Picture (spheres, rainbow, N blue to C red):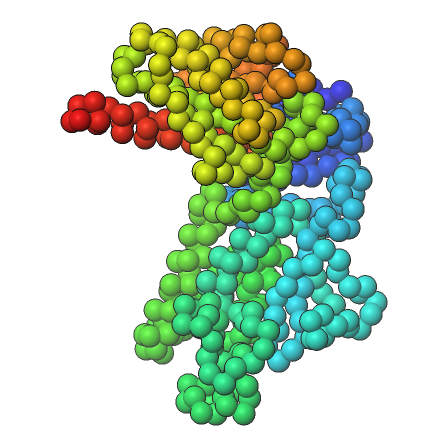
Length: 440
């Protein structure tokens, strides 16, 4: 099996695995190259059978750092298309890749699809419009691709309206549409600024062309053309248009200058995290209900235990519960945890959790596990503790501990979110109790 590489840069980029002949067999992108590549070599990593086989065949790794995540998204797409690596094909069927297409209309619309049309066919119909044969892709991350298009649309507006209107659409008011592209032709003459059909079509065409050029990895050419146009407008003393062009240049520079600019689809990250959690805990089904517990107190006084509930990765605030500590008088978190878990278990009418997540370390984990020692095995949920120190975060299970660097990013984010929510809820209840003690 391939040895772990010694030097890997941090930040966004694209990484490669190569076989003994130097042929690329897998390409991937990452927000942080160092974390992503290292994750393949951790003992606790949860890799698919295909990736394990790929690592056995691979002899060398390489990577290319990019200025931003959107650069990495585009570079990955271009390289997969160019090299068609063996394991990129094996790990994904056609339905899992994303392609950007364009309708064949007077004012074409951009769309995303899993299956590009056969390029030997002149055109095919989609949503009642003819589709052009040229597609950009494949892209591996649909959420990131949609995010990139949203950002580019703010700079180069294009139409998404499904039907034509009598007047400019609402999207044009927030500068995401040019305004004339979705107006019915018979009403366009009524709006003076749209009286030149040729100028309107050219402006729209230039926007679409710029977006497609960027997605093909030709951002430098787009930037060069924008700056050239800016200088021309200044020379012709068209200062209002020059200001608009200048804003486009600045906005485009900002997108490609920032390291992380692509937003994540919430459902997408929850699905990934749930899959990792299921594999890690060796569950037969998805981990549905997670109950997170935390203790909040001031040197043992006004102590409160909190229970936050997550169903399928999302909060269920109507099922949150607080436990005012009754039997422990000193600042003893482990004893307080045992008390609230015992009290929680008395409520058989509450839905049973698949996982209990404790804000704490090994001592807190063992304290909770001890509560279940004399209970029937079939009604014992899995218990884990998640602790945070100055330099690291660690997940504790009964017989293993996993450092944050070995936890997939989506799962780490979910665990942090759950733990922090229990902590927030606990602090809120503790402050209420303390205020009542001080002021009556």
